[in-house]
Length: 265
Ligand SMILES: [Zn+2]
Image 1: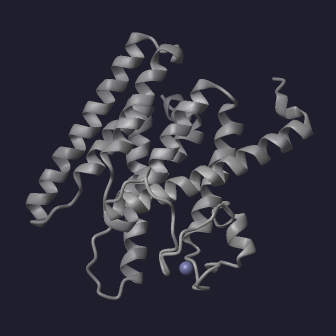
Image 2 (image 1 turned 90 degrees about the horizontal axis):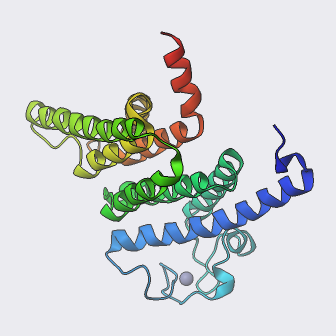
């Protein structure tokens, strides 16, 4: 197949544009996640240094570059900035490049990118405050719905996606209720269950099965890492990031995984 990316110049140019756009959107999502956790409006109000409160100018807010030029310090009070900003911007820039190269400039790319933005935002809020914002769930589901007329999916496939959403969302709700009873504490948040329902829409009956398995394995790994890192011992661990990472994996290579699986029969 001939692709515009066969031209090296176009390939490099596209990667550079996607990288800069991704870093900027990653920076915005980082800020939005922070403000959701703090209960602030994320449209009103200028950004300010979290340590001295000084309002940040345009030059302090250029993603990635500001951090490197200012050597990770606030320009006004010289306090160290958390490398979290740089790391999250770089990760989202890489995801943006990946999304463009994988799905090309199509409506599918746009839909998946909106889903990626929501997954990224809820990962940050869940890590910080154990919150999965309803906004992320609603926007993801709306993007899936709006893309339907262009997806070329038959009504059968659509029906199976809706069934997958109900089965996995409902199934995990039942399992979590059962675990709550057995462990006598809350095992899974309502946000996790709603997120699984959305994952069901995106990946269908077979794909979501793998998404759930990968999310559980990642969840166990994350829980072990958090347990090792936290000194107090018992700290709740957020499950949202594990579901988000498994969704990203399924988005990029899910087709190959499900094809391989269905090929076994
Ligand atoms: Zn400062």
